[in-house]
Image (cartoon, rainbow, N blue to C red; front, side):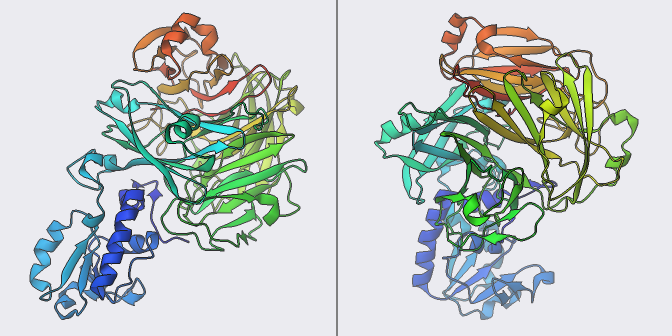
Length: 630
């Protein structure tokens, strides 16, 4: 496993990781490594605990002959393969160069000058700083706003193209002159293009389309990843987006259409909700190296969920490269509804997988499997003020046209069982059925077709049910699969549970887009479609306990500059749902003014709504994934 620290629920993201993993930092550190090798033996002073992650992400740096620390409790402990020495021993060091593994290292150098041997040269992580024009904050280099970065699976090949869609939501927090620094890597990890995009001054829509990028730079077909760095941001250090994968019309795409959520910028130990293929399907995992260090052969493995028999992938993955992994080649004979766990060793951000069936292809994403969670004894005894507690809401599409399937998914390493019930609601918020799913073991193979319950159009919610015992940690997830009955097109997505719409709080629930709980408002992004593919959102008003009888939702149409063109009211019953079609709610004239980068902001200040968005054409191709807010 890569020895790096990226994210935890208590402290959030590790900005040092992003600073060291940035592609420009990788280039600078490679050049620094060449210089250090020419200068001779190297010693390291690690004042802030950065050295281990630095050398893990950049193993080509020369190995030190001595390591020095300030913290007396670290003296004598192994560090980079040797025992750490006290800083006070530095005067006797005979290395040619001292590398101080810290940014903004001037403060460190000022207090150790008297300890430096005469003639010793100095290097610091400031040698790998980004250019000043790429920094949002000048206060401290490791300010989180300096590293609003992410990756996207980006392809223009095989009859498929990709389109990244978002909005300049930073403008709503006062940001000015926001721009994106972008670098496209091909399948081998080679940079194909580097460029910048200026965003609208207001909260306008943003699109980066692979076809336009390919034309702009005269590129051959590519399958790879796009690195995104947002500069001059405010409020959010997370780059959120929806990524459409669509048939580009050359006849090779198989009428394919998918949408996936942002990549989640933090590499994880494990990922889950990768489905095993049906006998008539091929499932390909896109393994995309997020770092300048190669992934060694055997460092990543696949396992049937709960089997604890991981199968290592016997090949290396070069820096920033993308490799298509056929799941059946490594787990032969394993079929849906079995689930596959990816043991990624912190080498990749949230991966995508691609399913091919009957000439059609669909893309979906894996989710982070938490390593830090343990069962929470408080969840089975939550008070009545929190009602049903944690809910995982998802739509039940019209049963005369769609099949809706749910598969609960273990999403934490120490989840050994899932004690669950399914509650069904019609669009008016009336509970029409429920089914106790049991105390599912980690290796379960349940995939429930909701037609077995005669589920009407509306939505369903997975909830904890402890009638047979079991444990819970609040990180309840499921894979959701939808099949168009006429065309055979399939879309799938996955999401996790939250406590929704209660005045009382538990830990960090109900979650808020910003600030402490309770989160009792809605701000969701719905991009617009076009004449061929119309956008929609399956919106739900989940409530753990009784809340307002109906929502007071506003649909606000924005153009590509962020200007508001129109507004429409919508009411959704508590525990009810509705489907929003912008082309039915706004006139053709207004949608024309909104343009191809316009969008609808779904806004409600009275309750927390949740939704899944997508595109749909007249031939039965459609996409679906959970929405994002800001």
